[in-house]
Length: 207
Image 1 (cartoon, rainbow, N blue to C red):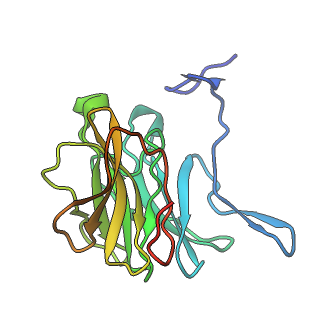
Image 2 (cartoon, rainbow, N blue to C red; image 1 turned 135 degrees about the vertical axis):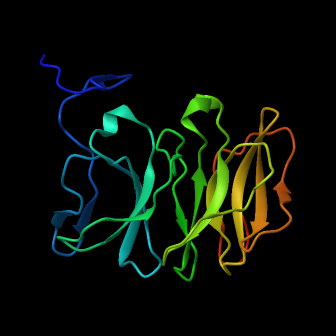
């Protein structure tokens, strides 16, 4: 075994080589598989835009991504040869894969909701906040500012007026909802239970 990476080993996977995890698009009709993101980086948690033309995903970039955990959000057109472009680049992680919260497009395709982590100095104790960022660019807004609890798994209501998410609190996972423009956070389903995942129908019914 020749070790030539800073992060040369990982739990479950064992020793690492130069293979990377990339985004692919598979055309069901033609059976053609196209790699969208070749190169030296790993990509995670892709999500389709409502019109099916773009993807948002999370990735670590820079000269040596093995030496940091600052994941950022990127956009890419779902066509061969497209170039990924940063949607949001901060000094804290966005949609970190080990946290497992996929970014979510608003129904009109103009905004993306995601979970943002905290400073690297806080390690696993960093707070994960629910954020929204315009697809056209600009700063992200915190929808759970001042809430000292972890959030996860954002999902838009079909009318685009609110965002559902899970809230970690006192050994429970609660289903919450907050206006997309910001405002009062309300409990949708609380109690002494752990909600692992959910989905919202066009009618507003939640499973």
